[in-house]
Amino acid sequence: MTGRRRFMDVSLKQEESMAKEAYKQVMRQYQHQMLPANHAYTLYVKRVAARIIKAAGMENLDWEFHVINSNEKNAFVLPGGKVFVFTGILPIAENENGLATVLGHEILSFTKVALFLGVMLSVIFDPSYSVQRIVMDLGMMLPFSRKCETEADKIGLQLMAQACFDPRESTRMWTRMSDTERGISLAFLNTHPASKDRVTNLEKWMPEAMDTWNRSDCATTNAYADMFNRAKLAYW
Image 1 (cartoon, one colour):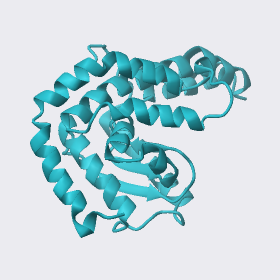
Image 2 (cartoon, helix red, strand yellow; image 1 turned 60 degrees about the vertical axis):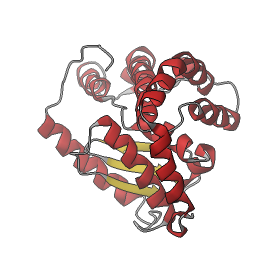
Image 3 (cartoon, one colour; image 1 turned 90 degrees about the horizontal axis):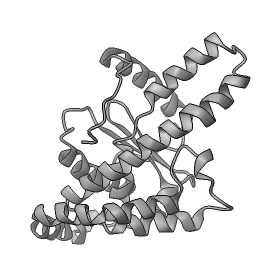
Image 4 (cartoon, one colour; image 1 turned 90 degrees about the vertical axis):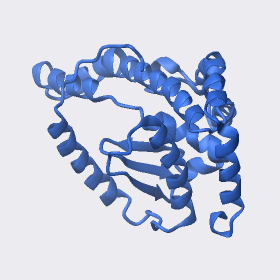
């Protein structure tokens, strides 16, 4: 979708192995904070994510949805389709369109190449990680990650529009996120673009996203969604 060539440094089998280990670590770390699979928040995340996943054509993965009871304003997706959302981000997402903004982005985020290079630099130059950490963070990891994050924002915006979530909510969601950030945000020292920069980019991409939204027969889709949301089962 981006038209950019990528070097695939990890085989599918290696990725699967690393993802399984990361999944075990996350589950151990947050085992006492995981909400039940039938909790209203978990069902809410699953419902929104399912539409994004279908739009992305990624239904073949073994998707799992976990909600972590924590004030942390975060969400992430591990390779293989393991989705984790912290309850702290739900008030900022505010509604299904805002949550679709978050999930559409996270499903498209990857930083494997930079991680691999970091390990190689640490072995070759500085086993103590002191110097290589500075080199990687400022010179390679952060700029690379920001580029991938910006691409994920753009593609995620298209996916949420294709899935009939209102893309205009994306700018409002990131404005709410920006309001919660303390101090001056230095995009150069952040793996993610600053929220205000995200809003600027999203506004630039919005006409294309609205074209996608208008072509996706969203009036019919959203009518069914409204019926579901009015049902007793949907209250949360």
